[in-house]
Image 1 (cartoon, protein in one colour):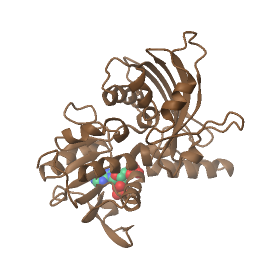
Image 2 (image 1 turned 60 degrees about the vertical axis):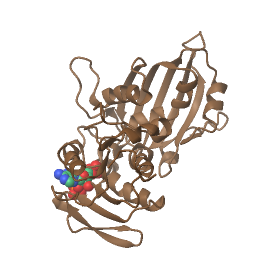
Image 3 (image 1 turned 60 degrees about the horizontal axis):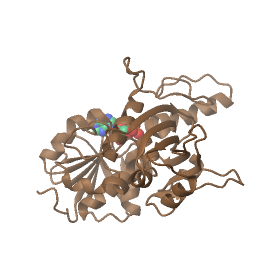
Image 4 (image 1 turned 90 degrees about the vertical axis):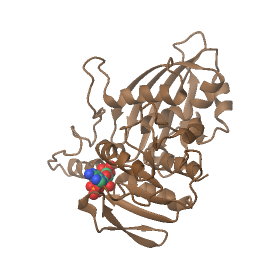
Length: 342
Ligand code: A2P
């Protein structure tokens, strides 16, 4: 099948359907009335036989294996990098287009890495796999794109406040349980995450590169921003931190443009930007919060102000929040799939 051909009435598979993102993928397909002929749900053998609701009926979850992709046109993967690396190519060989939420293929030259509001046109160039970007990168850069297009961002510094959902359903449960234990003064042994999570925060739970001192999450944000913006020369630095919030990420962003820029320019550029909502009430001190970002589709942006450390007037600071499970993962993947069906 040609990559440019719309896939009409596809048969769709979700790999990792029982996970935190998988459940939201099912919800997005239903809510957005995705035009599919059949939906099949896959997870590990532990979940085989469970049922999940879709459009008023119950679908039985199947254990994923090498034969799962026969007759599947679009496969939405969110079961971790190892599962994607093993089963992604098998799905492609069976004729499916894979939209992969893991980091397994994101930096491959032949894999478009897509945020539809930014580079949706790249979807048509796929060779079987399309990458769904890192959730912290999505939360930061959706609102930066309209600015970058008009007045190139040459330097970008990000600090993230990342929720439990990015580490999966087990981490969300660990946050709930450890918070209860902390309040009841009971001991709690953390399992999903490396440090106590209740009433604490810690540097992102990925490996630190001994050469650069950046952890894997930070490296992903840096590399993926350059790839998605198609601008290898943009200078990016990131500090990624896990905070005790259930499901929405926040990012503090400071950027420097080629030409002078004022907060009013940023507000004007973002006022009708797709996927972006300005929440910037200085009088009420009301700005993007995980509570407001959760369960909705937009990236919220506020605290739009001049970066006073740059007297030249080229730099702006702002703050963003987005639902990690929706725009940071499931929604973005379903938006990509919507373009595949034309
Ligand atoms: P299961 O629920 O059976 O373990 P999360 O990101 O919330 O941790 O979810 C991970 C998802 O990936 C779950 O649906 C999980 O299924 C699924 N998964 C994990 N390992 C595999 C595997 N080897 N094959 C298929 N699905 C897997």
